[in-house]
Image (cartoon, rainbow, N blue to C red):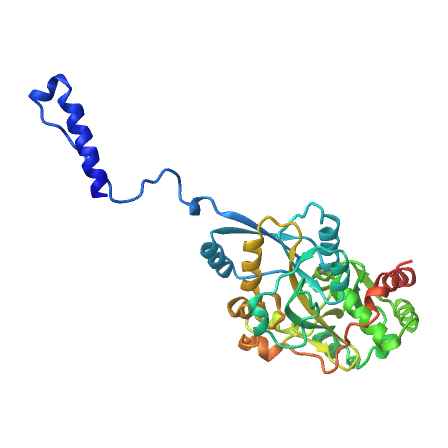
Length: 368
């Protein structure tokens, strides 16, 4: 810097000496700045955008997302794309021109379809070593486990108490005439919990025995809707929708949500779950980097963020699922009112080969 200053000073003196005013006016030397010259706006003025495709039930605390955005100079856009099945369909159909950088929400019932379609890029997050064992179902790390929950039948306590009706204790009980028209389920072709419940019946009754079971459910007034949101918030009488069905396929954690979001404080949950062996399905949700992303570095950071403790501890009271980071702690209200099944159904080994056939057979038997 001193050498540059001296050179400029010499040039200034020589040029001044050659001017007509050199004899009477001393040279004027301007001081040089010691800092860098800023020629453009800082990067923080133009954050990059990361698009995350999710199912409609995705939710996260705004402050937590804002912290990630600030730390990484990024703007997160969440692209909610329907229930899990519908969102996956959209991701597969757009894989040659992906609509997002990251896809969160595909579950173990739909996972093989996502992997077979080749929509994900592999990423072995360093956070994988912090997760509970037994949930990582893809050895190539294309889809990384984030959370889990049990899909079960929820029921309105008030309805069964008012009508002096015993709560069904098994899937077989749902076929009894006293439960006619009391159950709403989701279409397994478009809904993740709908498919999960279908798989629970396949494990319980086998193939093709499950079709006879569903035909009997249909004859007993079964109601079918396309999404969990419609089933729970429109049809279910135990929710804010006050619908006509007192039983709904939902989650064993849903009673905790009823307490947390109650308009006035509650001493107990107004709903509960049927947790008997064979009546529930353990659902695991995954996140992956969509193939073709132009923001691979940010996508990796976002996945690390989802698997780290702050986000994992944020999920229970936002999406009412269980975290998979072994160090994440459950909120008190969630731990008190949420439940897990005693012996949930697992993904059948033949799922990948038979899922579409099972869904089509179910559609023919129940909807046609």
